[in-house]
Length: 208
Image (cartoon, rainbow, N blue to C red):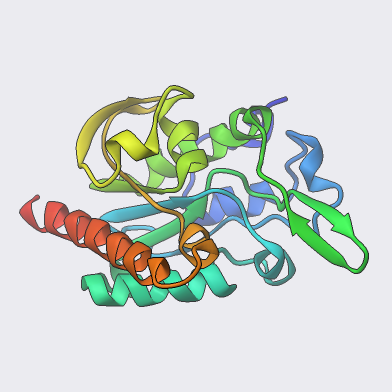
């Protein structure tokens, strides 16, 4: 499975977004409502890469518009990162879910889905050419950096990494949904950690 044959050569983010509506690179397109491509400034210094769209995103066609997105907006604001500073996308462009009655329950994308969708992420990296890539969660990090990456060991560090599109400055941190899943007082601690990592990202860009 691969999206490569649907990814156009050249063009800009809008070109990619239009082409992605026709993607049949894996089976996830069929049950999903629509492709969820990206949002934000295509000339931003920071690219935020999440895992995949959720239920709200699938219905609205935009990334990070559900509860996790609202938490991410709060974290970005506390870290001093403005809307114009970020381009937001996901490693997988269609919602993977398990039906449960009238609900659709998030299902983590498999490695095959991450690999199938990676040509879109590679094209976005070439077009946006960010100063820094922030991977939100382990799936996003593994999509870009390979299956051996361990978020718990390397979280919050800006490093130059080998990626499918050359050496890039990358920082990996928690996905906002992981903060939401944290119970009790530990949630505040997890949120504070996310903000700290985003401040590190902001400082790295400022130095550049």
